[in-house]
Length: 191
Length: 234
Image (cartoon, rainbow over all chains, first blue to last red; front, side, top):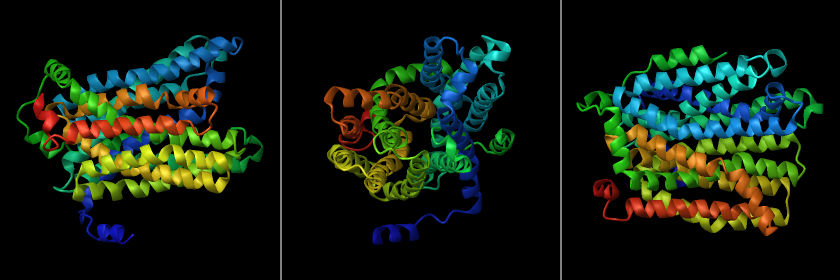
């Protein structure tokens, strides 16, 4: 404990602009992770809305496929978008990553259900999920590298740790939101 | 929707001075070739991330499921546990990141992967022997301490071991491969291990395996002379 207190006292005295920059760069990271957790929380709900319910097996396979495809896109995004970030620059790369992520999120959020537009619904959700995976592949790396390059000398570890720390905020908010929702309707504890 | 808001925030970012100061900007094919040439580094980096991604999925995905299935915890109770984990992680990550600035990356990487290797299975056995809400919270906080302490040093270490011209792509490839191959499979691996051994604490073995990966990768990256040995070798 004494060691912790000693360490806190010696943390870098950040100028406001550094702290603000850390906040600005990790805010997008928060969004990516928050979206990822929400998808997990509402997966069964999404599956019922977007995949043909008359065939449980096909519905399940499509859901798993959509999940898996999102994960498989990550290494691809890591190489292609990573090369873009290393060539064009950190700033433009992070903006492009967020743009792709937003397209994916908007697709998943606003596509009408299977009942309305048929097969197009699961197809669009799959494309949205692929875009999310593609951008997620480079988001963590892009943010980590940005933080390490803007850190004051000798404090890289402290700065870069806010990449993972911002994800914890996403978990905290998602859990609090879930708690508020289940608290509001006790009957839905199965969710 | 907060998307446009975050978009505006990110657009306001400035390019890092370190990137601006670099004269040589590699093109895509150069980056791909460099990644191929640096494959031992990407592999070691991936193993470094395995420990992070497995322990993260274990505490955020698997254990809450265990709480619901075995402890019959309500959704609200598991959300409380998840909330506490988030707070605990948020506290330890910057503290350990700052500590790694003082003592170096490898003591934390080696120390906490060793600690996870040794304590992972016993702590889960302790929970399974008498599953209560209190024990589950304690085990979760302990695992969160291990995860956050390791990860506080790991992420920055990964940015440092990658050659500068492929820093983002190398980091991202190592990270996403570990997530796709190991992290994503953690729930499945845990379920399978429990099924195969009949031991509900068996996910501790999976954590042990991940910790071993982290320990081996730390040794490969840092043991020879100084932290840059593997980087210079290729």
